[in-house]
Length: 259
Image (tube, rainbow, N blue to C red; front, top):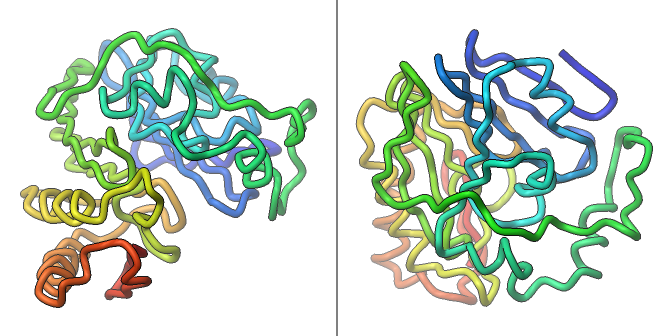
């Protein structure tokens, strides 16, 4: 399924990637259908209305599960009633993202766009979502969609409240901005933490039975063998005392990190 902005790609009959390839960030959101309700992992950039897409894919009630509160992941939060976020990013969701001005957000949202944008989108008047969630996500929470269960992993580093989701039923690992390919995973802003990021990478690398990894940017679907490289990267970064601000770009087989 395609429309003028979003590209919908079925991962299986009950799992869909909703992608925004026309923007330089190449953002993916994910719709997971259970028997009783659906989970939407992030809501994209807010350039187009993602609810128009989810409405065509399911009539189930949707809960929005936020990997973290950065603009490209909360763009359509205002279209949904039941939004969940980790407490570490709660203040950002309600009052704005720390250390990021509205002017910078508008510059980032409007640059390097390669596809026609929907009517009504204007980067000069764009405002990121701010508001209270329906509830909070906690490390170890298990979210039952009805015949399909997700486990929440608190994976800070890129943001204080970043989380990943492991689909226990289908063995998919949704890593948000903790792990993806092609462009660097960022942990060099004052609001980030290199130490936390490396610990979070180490943690997800220990999850057993992962079938496919779905990051929020770039290539859709990574082989779980990348987790072996993640373990190697963690050891190398620590052994060489590189887990700190200012050590620069570190490239590994299949991904990179910038401190």
